[in-house]
Image 1 (cartoon, rainbow, N blue to C red):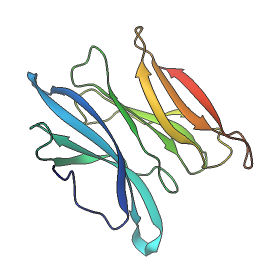
Image 2: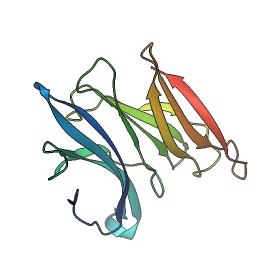
Image 3: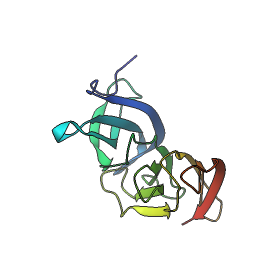
Length: 166
């Protein structure tokens, strides 16, 4: 057993992990884990974000890599993380965004999480923050399918939806 990171003041839960090639070492592998985090910000307000950790020794030890998403909205949302086909160190991170405009967002990395592309807004028309928990797969044509629960109105019924994107 090993600990991924220190216990925060709030929480660090609901990890999403993937094994990818280590950048620059295609025959070596790395485990990358994205974690839903929440804690107090300055002034006592709550804030939520996604942290990234890596292990190069099959999970025996972990290193903090960075914060690909600095704000996920009120209470945050657990991420989904997958490798990108045809890109040995490519990553796709999806998550619900729980502040207005409520929705589903994504970020891509081509270098194992060292850097991230711009945030992509997949949906921004949610009725309230009760949405998210995405799961993403990549189709054979390279496009992504992200499935999540969603709502269209402040008091609206939640339902399962999907977005196809690239």
